[in-house]
Image (tube, rainbow, N blue to C red; front, top):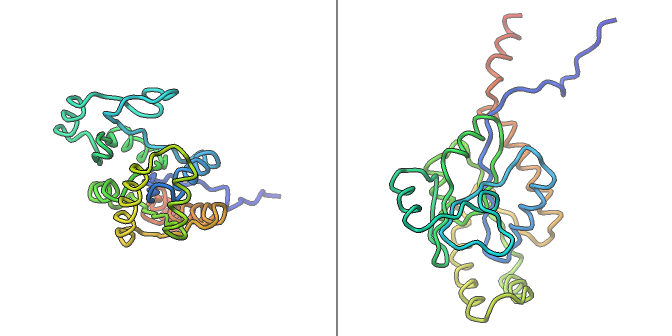
Length: 217
């Protein structure tokens, strides 16, 4: 008796995608990003280059590519970044080469960047990008989260709140907008979005050949 093929076992080559999570500071995107990286082996965090000094425990090449300001400027001039921005006095950028290699090999790349970086990334790689913006349930809740961290001064918190309101104003530049009033529920929505985007026809590199064989067969 011939063994039947299980359709779910058919694996087609696909192109990876650029999965962007953006939010104002305190809205929970870092927590959601960590949960996604822990639960899904097909997605890796983009490692940015930065001019800021390493913090305790950070490893060059793993957490960031730490470079001096002149090196960063040269990389910008040579077109080596997909996106870059100046944030709180330091420069951050996404090296183009490693990301393009991962996409071609079917590996998804996670980005934890602001709306300016997202806009640049979309201009460079619009067909590959999926943009999600995370909103807090309220401005009051956002400020409470920042204060409960007990890591920033009042001046820093006030600056972050001002920046948060500016970033929230760009919510309509994203493909999906989620309200993070429950971390688990928000994370579940993110995983559903990622699963659906992976199945889009334009990302299925092996689909043309598979369909052709069905027609010819």
